[in-house]
Amino acid sequence: MAAACLKALLREWTIPEQIVGGDESFGPLWHVPFVSIPGFVGRSNELKRLKKVIFDPRARRIISILGLGGIGKSRLALELTYQIKSEYPQYSILWIQAAQQQTFEKDVLEIGKKLRIPGIEDDKADIKNLVKQRLSNPSTGKWLLVLDNADDEALWAKPSDSTRQEHLFVQYLPRTTNSAILITTRARSVATLLIGKEVINLGSMSPDEAVKIFVYELKTPDLTSDLIADRPTILTLVNELAYLLLAIVQAATSIHMTQRPV
Ligand SMILES: Nc1ncnc2c1ncn2[C@@H]1O[C@H](COP(=O)(O)OP(=O)(O)OP(=O)(O)O)[C@@H](O)[C@H]1O
Ligand SMILES: [Mg+2]
Image 1 (spheres, rainbow, N blue to C red):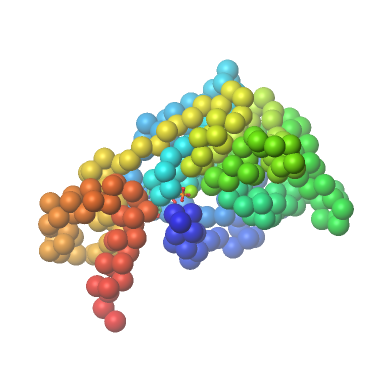
Image 2 (cartoon, rainbow, N blue to C red):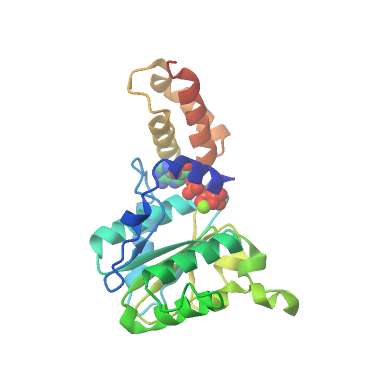
């Protein structure tokens, strides 16, 4: 799964907790579990549109990135968070790994701790509601909440039967007039769930961009190497991989691993 691959790729880049977290509960919070990764390619229109929705005073500021597994949704969201951090430093950025109930609840608890919500670590604390209330209070300041990999319709989409109501996690999403929610998902039903949402249908990279990513991920210092010079073969390869970035990154990584001197 692309999410797992991205996580594996990023593991070595993970920032120590004291740096990502900090105790700055009254300043902007930064809860993003990955550092900025070099080598981001393209997606400039999508980044513009994301910022337009997130900072438009008239918009409802809910936007989803919808697309196939491995097409680049999470990486786009990550790039956006780092751009916002540098362009709008007054914003808190809160990243929730929404693929599973456990990761969702863990991130919500971490955010609650960083917000220094009294009683958040108590055994019987209603963590999700406490965090929702705090974030819904305008005095908490401006924030962008990212729900990454919210693919599981059983957790996020409208339940088809009432017995699954307790899993409708969308009820825990805070709303204020000056904050924004970004969802990355493979599921159209999740992307279109919230009222007033906008959806970016994330398409494939262009052949040129796909080649650029492949070459970058080869991590070959010798840019005149036979493989890199053979552009037609690389174009055929990325085409056969249907321009799916996960597959392209994996192909380049495995070539890098096998060609690396031992
Ligand atoms: N714009 C980009 N520039 C460079 N590399 C990219 C870009 N977009 C994605 N990638 C790389 O492609 C791989 C797959 O991307 P990503 O994990 O974001 O896909 P995804 O759509 O979130 O997949 P999933 O649905 O499984 O979560 C990752 O290794 C990522 O770093
Ligand atoms: Mg993803």
